[in-house]
Length: 74
Length: 290
Image (cartoon, rainbow over all chains, first blue to last red; front, side):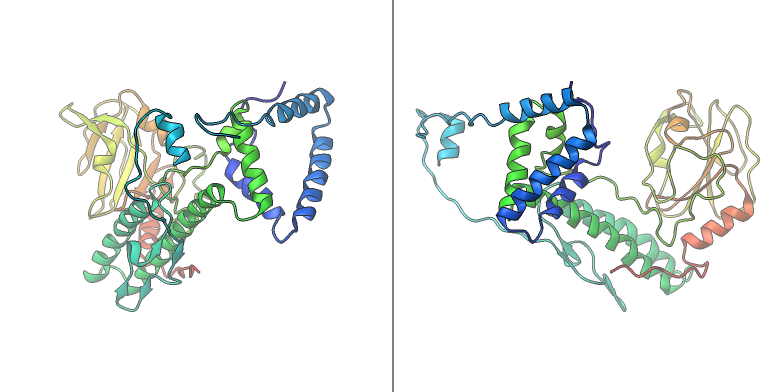
């Protein structure tokens, strides 16, 4: 459902830098608010609810805590 | 030590002998040419070590500088040609500093927002291919394009030259055969001490312009023999494909093996004008970098 090709057409680093620049000079609370607005805008650009559903599921799966290193205590 | 343990395992005997803080910075001189003093390599610009950009940048500086210096010292180009070293390698240094700064930012985020985005990429990378392309542990140095800078003749008017190598691009290699039929590499025949005219041909010898002193290389689909030119055979068509070439397609190659200009056909006046421009003799103003 989610695209597996390079949606950034080779310009992923530029896209990432653009997102980082969007947060310049913002407080943590403002950054969080910006992220929420960005999600809404981009979700609307995507439009397809099945794609959004898959994206939400992927994002939630990725929140699983990292496995601990051997010998490491939580 | 926790990270070392994670790699070697809890049971492996290990002790820490030495550790230190490793620091670097990205910086460059505003201008690389100050009168008769020219700055090259780390004296002109420093970058973080990610991507092998320091050493490669220094070698590219030398490649760019030496032929210009030689032309000026021999009186074959005006001293103003040195300004294009500053223009072209300043552009290269900016590119290296940009890439290297992005890698540094990815590894050591400076704000909470940067860290959230970076950690998001890391968390998604296992499952999402797009996130893997965003993992930035260093982007390996690639040949720097000089497209759009003063010495290059823009492709406009080069009718029908889609694909291939735009003016300013570093030349690509391809396997060819020399006049005696021995295997050879195209890149070994390009660049060096002077400019090279690279003319692609089909199965007929091309009619070449009379440009005395300009080394000419003909790459044919079949073995050809052309007076005053070295002929190579591109029997697999790889060179023609990589250069987007049809019979007649002509490239003017700089001594540092970057494309100075390209043409749909070897037109004498156009080549002479491009050569004058590429050697700083055309009176085209050098764009000041930085």
